[in-house]
Image (tube, rainbow, N blue to C red; front, side):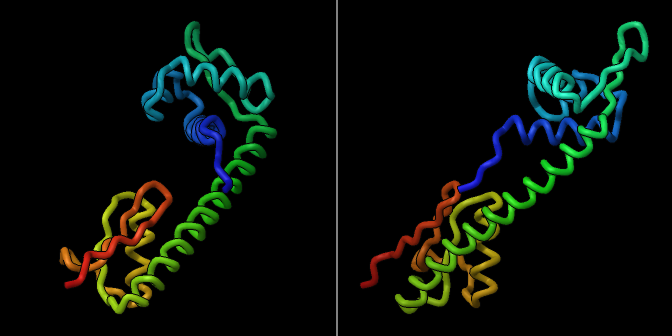
Length: 159
């Protein structure tokens, strides 16, 4: 399965923020990303060392970050990678849900409960609705349990 390393995702986000606001500070970037200033500093040093970002002194203690042409190209590549990875994960989850839906139908059910939150659970709900299954809160309905990228079918015992 394809995954995006966390530093790659952060690089993309940092490049996007700098492009929108070259006057962004390390503290403001850290706040927006929910990470420590030291983490931002490490990423920026890497991006500068690789030639993706230039640093200019704007004032005595203020720095200005400028994305280079190579940085813009990197941002474009990272964006494409992110989109491709997202579609890959979507197709993976959707395929797993379709397999579970086959099992639900084979058992004679037309309703399901979806247990879980987040994007994967949302893909699960939408796929069920698209496939004509009714989503209910009934404890007697089969449960589609979403954990991370996995979807499990749990059937209640029929009497």
